[in-house]
Amino acid sequence: MTTQSKRSAVHKRNKLQSSGIQFIPEPDCEAAGNENIMAVIDRVGRLMTPEAEAAGLPLPKGDDFTGNSRVW
Image (cartoon, rainbow, N blue to C red; front, side, top):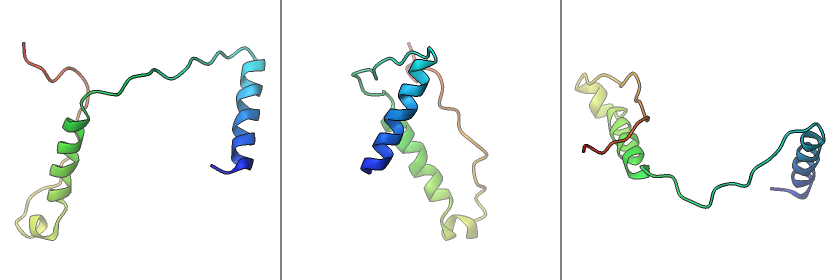
């Protein structure tokens, strides 16, 4: 980030705070499930190869990344 863009971000934040918007600090934790997302990205990437197209494999229409993947 350049010095100019940092100043611009600070200015925007100050403007928003002066209008009553409150900012909370970012949480000090990592998002869970990254390995699942990476697996989906890998699978979709393999479906976009010329070999997959030649084999007639369809492209996925979408994925849902909500909920808990654990089974109790």
